[in-house]
Length: 125
Image 1: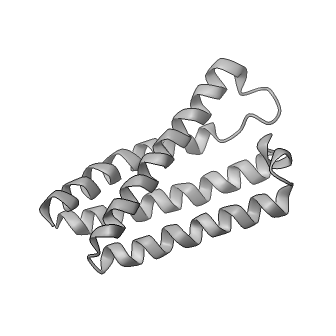
Image 2 (image 1 turned 60 degrees about the vertical axis):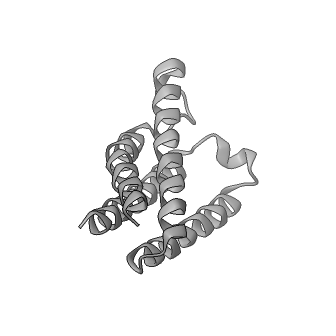
Image 3 (image 1 turned 180 degrees about the horizontal axis):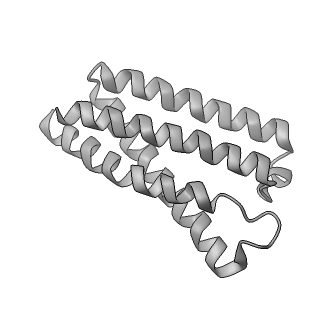
């Protein structure tokens, strides 16, 4: 049951990540130009998304390494959300290029239970 919950919350982290990507891409995230433009930003995020989905498939197959990788990815998404919210609070969300704080909240909300259930599944496996 814990592994099923881990899979569900990890899938929700991926969904929040996709929403976060769209918020950044459509909102004019300031880092897009710094990493080589929109096409590079899309390519990098597509690679990350593909890896995350591959990890999800392996989590559902019960692979221990996938639980660890999902745990790391979920923790990074929590940190990503915290970073965007912190930037919005301290720099100001009205400055152009500071986006991602709305979906950053979602990354934190689904990321915390994902980390909990992935860690619990690791301990039980």
